Image (cartoon, rainbow over all chains, first blue to last red):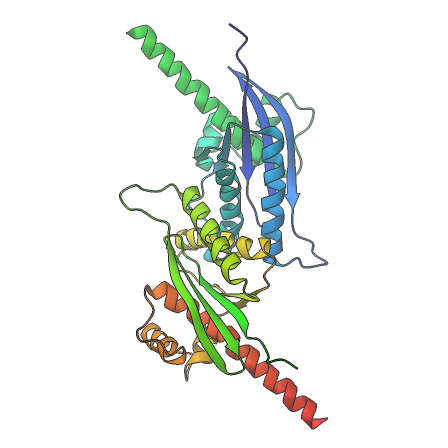
Length: 178
Length: 178
């Protein structure tokens, strides 16, 4: 039998101005950062039309998805937004993100902000800064990934990885108990 | 000189369950309905995953856009939504609609619900039913297009057509006045 191969997980933090993404490889408990970045689709001086911004998000995400061929895409679920207007804007970007994953037939997993926090820190009430620090530590990075949207995307990817590991462990324990 | 050719206008009423569309040809004051319909992407029994629904909207719209090659896509602008949750859902569908138009490089125009109402009825406060009746009358249809989403989409297409006619007239008057 060959060595088990790592699973590639892509986390995405959608936004109508900046969409962050992070790719990690997961093998058992070990997570390694392969790439992170942000798609900036807003040019303040040129006032990019909204539909063009969505096109930028869609094409750049497709190119990252093709390059890494992740087994899974993880995004944060959103239930609360500041207001209807910002929810609508976020919805546009999120719709395009979900479409990009569906088009390339990559399974999509959604995690609530609380699940993300709980999975990579001690509590579901960690601050954004604490989460970003945990991302840096867990992925053995020298610095906190910038922009914050990229760090947030890596946090969701890590959440998926740890949830997967936890459910595998439960499965193993159940098998042993039989 | 040959006869002037009609302009094809496509109106779209995005929704996460039903997306209505309507295609009209416009020549001067005359508008003719070429096709209308609705993309239903929600199956109550099968509980279609949300990303799959967006994929259905995207592909079906692309196919209609390719079939009619409209010069313009018109959609209603949204500033107010019932709540943040419904705004988020609508935003997802709308994002995919805007992307489909941008991908095929069809210029997009947005009109407020008030503009749509004012352009095809006597007031900006017409009811939904009055608007649908006006769509039937203006396009010389035997019945009000069903589902309502298709009638709403045709209303936005007519709004664009009438706005265009109005601005052309102003231009002609300005030229005559010179």
